[in-house]
Image (tube, rainbow, N blue to C red; front, side, top):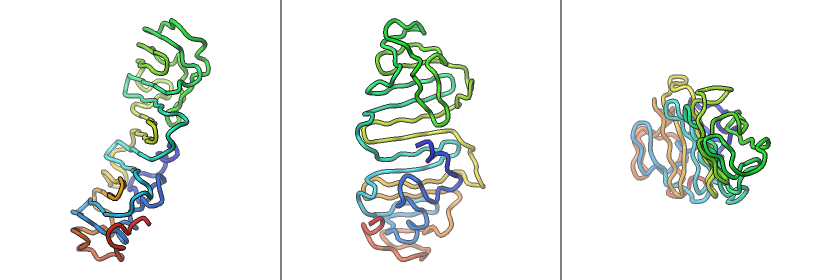
Length: 221
């Protein structure tokens, strides 16, 4: 997931989440249910993938992808200014049994506790733990200290894997851009509008005749 978010995100034209999340292919091959100026929906194939997305909205760059259910069942590390939270099931190596106001009440050594948030790899003692119990907890920390991001999150819950990080709000003159799919709905948005977009589209008709649509449920097969 970290590698996905390191890619250029000024205009999200192709996403590493899946090859079918391709802006220009959607414009060319997609059967547009609706499109208006800078965003819309295609009715396409189901299952390639079932869901997935990558988007940048001003300073927030996020991804969502489908993955296996286990290994682990759930995990996450997030930072929001002075708050750090971590949770995983099964618990990660080095997780204490119980901590209250930075006092460890039960459990063994925490030296091997090393989750990662993109390029940030905190140790257990790098923040002040308000509480930690079995597999997760909440801590306070200095803002931006020791390479800690101001804002960031990586999470996996069963088969859903997501990540968010803070980036420059305006890149190459583009304020927001994104691609996504959920079942048969495929979405694209960008502001200012992307080159070759349909401009206006409704039920397969589009103002910009770029490409040759494959028909309903045809895109992504």
